[in-house]
Structures are given as structure tokens and as C-alpha cells.
Image (cartoon, rainbow, N blue to C red; front, side, top):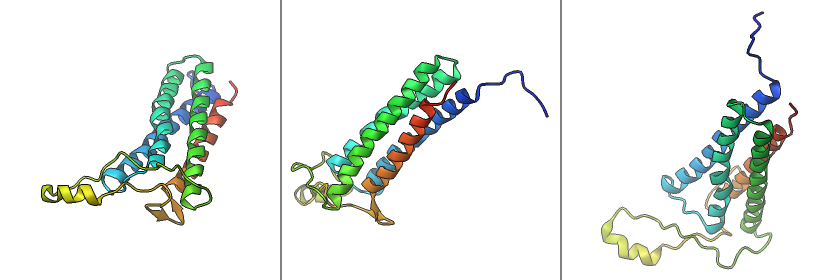
Length: 174
């Protein structure tokens, strides 16, 4: 068939694609969490908020890795950023496993598990009543379950998968 003079090493392409995939996936996960919070009305607990931190840090880092790769920057920098992305997802995996265990009552959660997020009322007349009746969710009660998994449970699976993608891309030769 046709042969291009602009052939790129397969490792470079796969790292670029992996970094872009990770950036989009991480942004999508945190976007969905924010959507469940602000549109769905699910108030996050403190552990829920902690699980978002690796995504907030990881998405821009993976975008930076993709940009460096596309710009022809040093391979070691792209690989290092992908490795950091994998470590962030492992950290998120640990928090998600811990939170899932707290929800299933396998172990005790933090004694001060509350959130700073407040439910927003749309009726100004019930504002004072809402202040006394609304309480932040507890970390040991899953707000929602789908197919038997809570948000934290799904985050275990997603964090593990994204960590694998990041580490595999970081370890590609070339």
C-alpha cells in the first residue's frame, strides 16, 4: 500500500495515545463525580472528596505528557509523567479500597468523616429549616449503588485500570 515518510516509532504513538486517553478518562471520572454532586444531588463525604484529588492532579499531568510526546520532547519526561500518573491512580486506588471497606463495614472509618459541601436549597423560605435539618453524609453509608458497587467501589475498578494503562505506557521501550 502507501508508505509514509513521516513514520513514527510505535512506542511514541502508543505513549501519546495512552497519555491522551488517561487525560480524557481522568477528566471524565472527575466530571462525572461533579455531575453526580451538582446535578444528581449526591453530597460527597470527606473520603469521596479525597478520591478526586488524584484525578485533579493526574488529568493535567497526562495532558502535559501527551503534549511533550507530540512536540517530540524527551521520551524520559513522557515516561516519567506516565509513571507519576500511574502512582496517582495507585494512591486513588488505596483511598477507594479504604472507603469501600468503610462502606461495607469491614473496618472503621475516620471518626470525623464529614464534608464541607452543603446541599443547596432552591427555596429561600426554607433556608433556615434546611440549615438545621441537612447533615453531611457519613463515609460508612453508600449514597448510591449500581450493580452492587458504590461510587467508591467503581472508583476501585477505574483507578486500577487507569494505573495499569499508565504503567504499561510508561514501560514501553523506544
